[in-house]
Amino acid sequence: MGGLCGVAAIAGVLLSHPSNTVLEIPVQASATRTETMAAATGEVDTNAEGLFTLDFLTGDLQCYVVNTRNQNGPPSLFRSNVMGDLQIDPTSKPQFMLLVGRAIFQGGRTVNARPANSVVYVIDSVSGNFVAYGIPWQENVASRGGAQTGALIPISKGSARNVMIREP
Image (cartoon, rainbow, N blue to C red; front, side, top):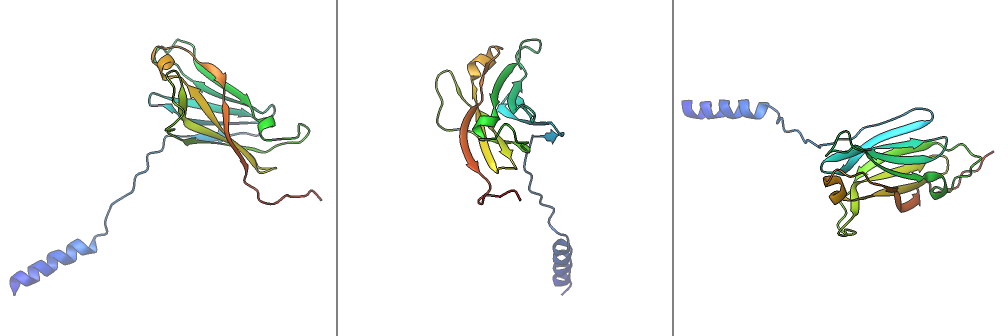
């Protein structure tokens, strides 16, 4: 009888404590914005992140990647202008959002280049249009400490808004 009470007491103590299991989701990204500029970071390859900036006044989007092999060496820089891709009227005042997501592409690899591990999304909240851009990253150039330049490549476009909004 005493043993049974002991087992019951131990079971009661164990069952009264909630599980402390916590789901950890590793996220290494940041973003911020002002009235005229947005910035975010995202993984380019396993050794480096890129700094993505979007100038609201000009529509210029760029990805700046520090040289991880030579800190004094030139950085890599990729650019594009989002105004045409988002079909924005140049006389309007767009309201941009900038987000960076992780994407490990299975296809599209060649000997010299593959898409980087990030996709940068630009959304115009006035029209609802969005564009996703990829980075043509060359790991072999980065591993030698070389700088890369080029255009950010639109890989997908769409609209987040399902109805047209008319101005009064």
